[in-house]
Length: 247
Image 1 (cartoon, one colour):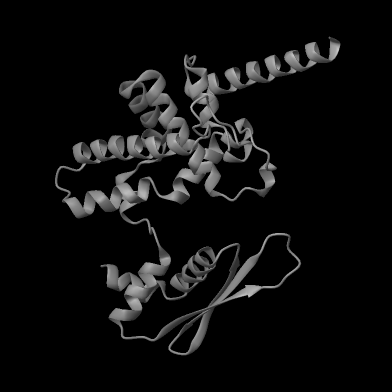
Image 2 (image 1 turned 120 degrees about the vertical axis):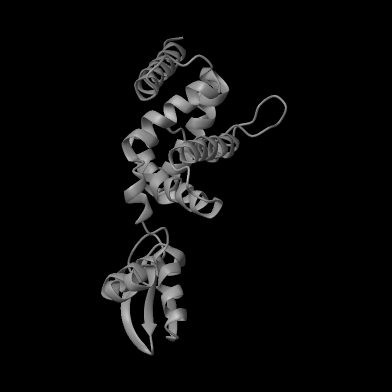
């Protein structure tokens, strides 16, 4: 009996802490706690409801992504009346970029609320942005559009959306560098290879060559990240020349 009581007390305390932390993040007391618990349940828990549907944050992540896009699109539409479809789409992409969403998730320390069988230290950066999107989806289901919009304004638009700064923000250094190389008729090549280091996590290294000369090197946990990191280094090496293309 004592063991069962201790388990129940432990769960009660954990749920209480979850409610307190969540209320501080949201700025109000959540009602549909099951929805928020799902928003912080990782698929590694292998949970299912009575109908056999998976219980994890992935569907809420999809919903939150749609809500973020809608609110951000509405804000940009009103704030930049002269912006055409291409401009507005590009600006929205900068605001809801994976990198930016990851930063937002880290800022709110959402990883501390996750239930998972995987140690938090083994997750990649993207889990922070995924959790942020799932949280937005949960807010929409719990409180509706207005509360969801209010949260996005408070956590995203007001502190982070500066139209002038965003116009100069680079989404992909690789795309920008390739565009410059093609325009200037320069030969470029990304030589990516698996890095057999002593790390627990597999790494990839890349050598970026322009006109048959290595101009940047980088190393990361994925080919895409390694290429982007090398491209960023090359961008700063050729910044003055590339900037002329953007003007």
